[in-house]
Length: 138
Image 1 (cartoon, one colour):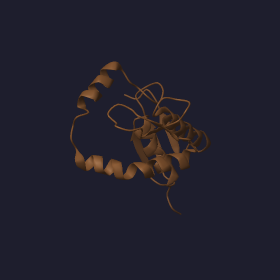
Image 2 (cartoon, helix red, strand yellow):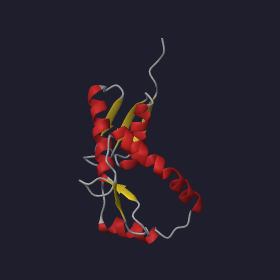
Image 3 (cartoon, one colour):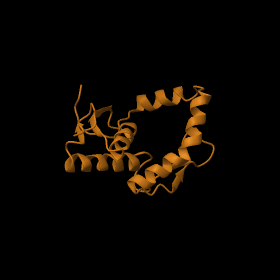
């Protein structure tokens, strides 16, 4: 008799955290997702936005190359796995052309994040032994 797969712990209930959690669940794994807020999703402020913009000039060519070479496949994965329409392209700050894929009903990033949250929550409800989401973690 084989034992159940070990449980992965994912810290953070934003886009990256739910992308990681859903990838683990797709592979048949078990996930405990921890988030410090009362709800999962986007947290932002004017101060954080300003800080991000000030850091935007950091040069990491090796990371940029990885992102550029893999972004098309990443968008395809999101559309296929979460049944998303990301056909709307937007030109956001720092870009010279329209290249940010987004949904029509929400601001950039939230179409994706909400879809991932909904999928993980559905799995947690149906298979509580495979996925657990805890909020207000400190």
